[in-house]
Image 1 (cartoon, one colour):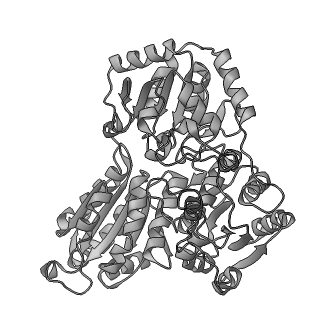
Image 2 (cartoon, rainbow, N blue to C red; image 1 turned 135 degrees about the horizontal axis):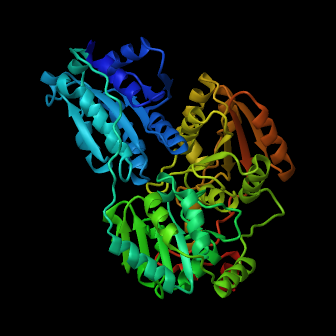
Image 3 (cartoon, rainbow, N blue to C red; image 1 turned 180 degrees about the vertical axis):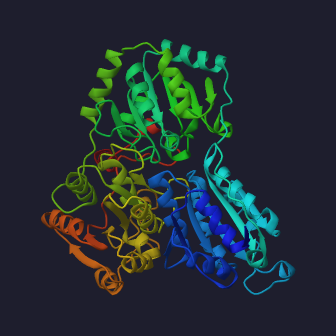
Length: 559
């Protein structure tokens, strides 16, 4: 049938199973918005800012496992998506960003609101398209979704000139095709991995976001039990392994548990599953797991030997590879190693000051009241690390956070996207006051659509993580990190259409959370905590992860 380019865009989205789009209209993309208006199958969420749309599409994708979709007009509309696209790229989130550009004859002439968005986003997308011919429009959109979902997922940009959206062309529906296998391993790779596993006396599993992306959580849990190995995770790997399991030792890295950091430092085989050995995990690379052989399984060959040299590697989909390995591994037992790890867990538990209101206490109350069954989104900083440490994630896709890019202002949009995709789940965004200031305008989005998210603001009136670094490494010179001013977050939140609750005492936390869960719209809970609370354990920049210190160690050093 004959359709306009704008109508073809909508039909292609329907082909791909898209039910929700996040965006903001403008001049060059008006034809697409007009076509969107004339159909009923796709829900559009109008955000307050294009960055919020990108983060919402990201949160929707992480929570559901589907491709997230955002749209924006040309020029500043498109460039406002950039931070959200980069966030998705660093964390391997499948997203398609659709932008419109000026008419083809006006490209390259500094036309009003013209920008080369494909060029701008080239380093932060898996692929980018500029569609100048309506005859390739449908196939381009289909390819974009295939690329976003396949292999190591990521964002894809489709920029369409306005005249293409107005032109008419023949459209034929095409169902989505099966994704090709990304396997690049051989039987020899499998056997080499099995040899390392069978020879190990002190194996340790280091779990990354790839386990969640590949849907390999059940296979991971079976694998850990078969080889009788303790498990640690990264920020992106939260929920891939049950956080309440005896074999789980917590997060690894700069703010990881001492048990995980010491265990990895003492193991004789480190098995990295869908992880990339980032600097925040590794610390001093020369001293990272220096006594261990390394087995790395990942879908992206570029990650193998990039940061840490491996002894054996398998390039392929983690679910597929672990299914093969689990069939070939007989039940193993490492009782002495297991007992040692349990001793470390008892010796080095996470701890915090319990005499006054603190973020760890708030996180533990959220965990208790939700029974660990909520979707938690965060912004970036101290609250992010506390949320990773003190909430017990038992299921995948329950912790959404900007890991690679570290994007302040990510969480609120992501929470809106997660709740839109998973309306049956309690969705809570935890943000510091510095992060909350950046994109709090998205509260207006939540109230406009009456999306019942819960926004918890951890207000210590400072940029907490930066202040922590200034305290520890910059001689307590607090340059531009004090946020004491006249802003009243509760009044601002009420002005944006949300119920607001201020909490200043421990006994007020549970009633506030219970009231927010019962509410039928968005709720903001501002929690006022001391400005000098710190996240421990911590590894100094460039230090070995085995040398993590906590508050007690710090006090001893100062004495």
